[in-house]
Length: 236
Image (cartoon, rainbow, N blue to C red; front, top):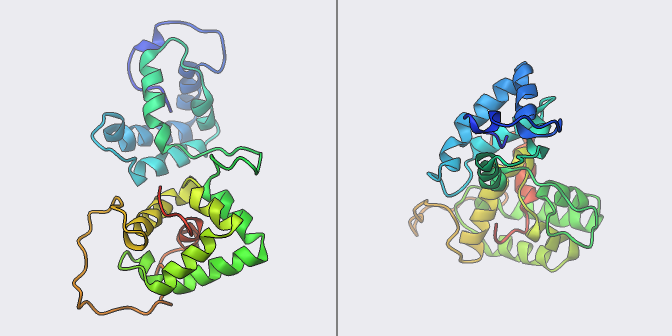
C-alpha cells in the first residue's frame, strides 16, 4: 500500500522479505492483488497529493479490498527501509487505514466501531439501547434533524460504559464511510458542532418524518449496522 509508482524503491536491494518493494512485487504477481492495488492508486491519489482533506470513502473501500487479497496485507505491514517516498506515503495514508485494536479492554483508545458494536450487542442492556437508537433516530440517519427523543436516547447511551466505547470508537472496516456520516450527523444535528457536511439546513416549514422511519430505506443490512456502530459518537 505504502509504495507508490516510482524508481526510489528499486534503488537498493534489501534481503528482508518484508520490505515494501518485495511486498509490492508479490502483489503484482497475484492477479487480484494487482487489480486491487491499481484501484487503490486511482482512488487514493487525490488524498495522497493533498487535494482532499478527508479520506474519501472510495479510497477506504479500495484499501479494504486490497487487504482482502492474499498478498495485500503484507503491503500494510512492510518496512519502507530508507525509502523516504514510501515513508511519506505510508504516513499520509494512515488516516484511511482500517484500525487495529488493542487487546486490553481497559485501553479502548484504538477500538474500532465494528468491535465496539459487537461488544455492545453481547450485553442485553446495551443491545436494548441500540434497538431504541434505531427506533428513535430515523431522521438523524437521513441527515435531517435530531429529535428530542433521539438526543435523549443518545445521551442515555453515553452515560453507560458500553455507550462510552461507542462514543470513543474509530470508524473502521467496510462500514467506515457510513459510520463517519453518522458521526458527522450527530455532531452537527444533536450536539451543535460544525460537523463535516456541506448540506444546507432544511426550511423550518419542511414536513417532518416519523421518528421510527427506517434509518436506511433500501440499504443493505451492513449499512444499518454501520449506523449502529456510530451509535453514541458525538465526534469523529
